Length: 428
Length: 178
Image (tube, rainbow over all chains, first blue to last red; front, side, top):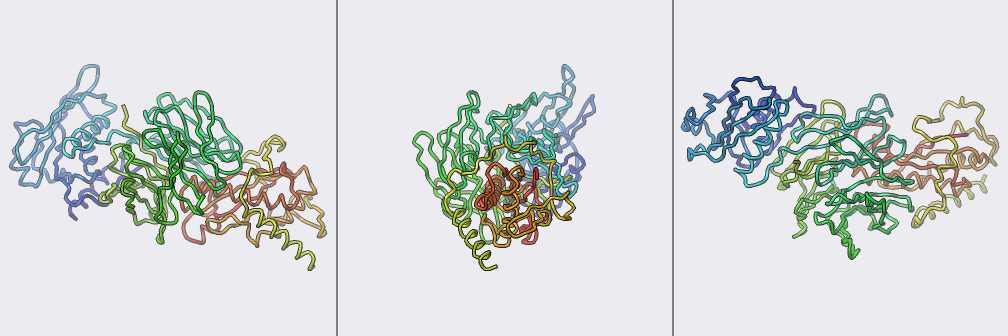
């Protein structure tokens, strides 16, 4: 186990140079599946990415797999004829991946990949993946998704993206905030918005084409909707007081949001095409942090109407209100898995603010983290990992934990504090 | 002196009762259009050295130098009650504002880093509005005060622990025009 951690750590260190966010796996499942991802052979071209290494890192980060350290490989076969399964079995692998990359038409590249069951000595999956030589990371993540799915039965989420906010204090009271997007492994970060004023609450539309977020750039908080492909954006109708917490309806036609124009923070639904505004909560307490149920029929939100924040669900057609959280004095910022069954949230107990998950079928609550300043949970579209913001060594970092608490990693940022992660839906 | 203390106590009691009651739509309208110049982030007037160009108001207590008053007011955790240690200076600001109808302020509410960001936005606003109501009870017109919340986004002290957190749970009072 220790050797695996060390080798995983070394692999992560090797990735450091490329990304602003560096993944450090801290814990995996009890018995991760050993797999060897052999360096791909490249003929007739120079590649700017190490596809096999990216695949290996993806699988390792999921916590389900224990990738073999490249330095321990006795050889680097790239075709089935070159594979001596006994060698790979003896070195402890259950599975192995080999591949060959060659030029394809139109300046593209072609990766022929094969996944083998080492013990049974037979091929599990093979495919030829075509991609741009500039987007080899996408080719690699596609391969990771396929391997992950073939061996775990779960849909892979390696080809997804995350957005997050970074904040850097230049001088006391003087900050630079950035809204950034990166691959789910932290690579290829790019800045979507940079501002001297706060940015928060980024939210992906369900089709992955747009972001909504809150920006103070006009000197007051306002909600913006930005189309990712074009960069075009629009400020939605802004009111006196708070404008915050945008949440996309599943069909993308409406935003739930928080306004305090009527005296205190309430949840409203804005129909984007018409500008029609429907008020959804009517209570003098703080009602905030709305999120939609996957069927679009109800909205969950945080309310302190009972004294301190708890999470409630409002059925939109009937307007029936139901309190969901009863354990603990503070539960807020709920997010649902795509099947609507599990609710992750920020839960406060005697030792601080943690990420917790509640099974809405049984109402059992599990506290997943022991760190004490956790916030902003966001769930991978395949429900495998909850990413969240926390503090490590006094710095804001992103971290991930699986719903059963067995898999953990952290993603510190090189430059400033990072917070408010939002995981994309499946893209393309 | 005694009478003055009784007035202060009564004022405090009234304002606490006001704040503790339900916040029905505020009787103060945050009417941006009466602000005159736009209150952008760059116009921050803070007080400390008393070298402000002759700004002083004459209140019932005699000479009143607004420049020497506190402009940052602190709050207890998860609370938006105006604390006793804020009362005297707030009353003084109120007296100044009440006697200078063209003066206006911006109240910026903040929260410490614990808990979730949008909830903390709402907490910051609650604190700014609590100060605003206190000032209203003391004669400040709604047109003279604007509130905004920055939640936990603009701490004055980075770092964790009660020392940092207590300094970040605050409302900052900034004169937009005097």
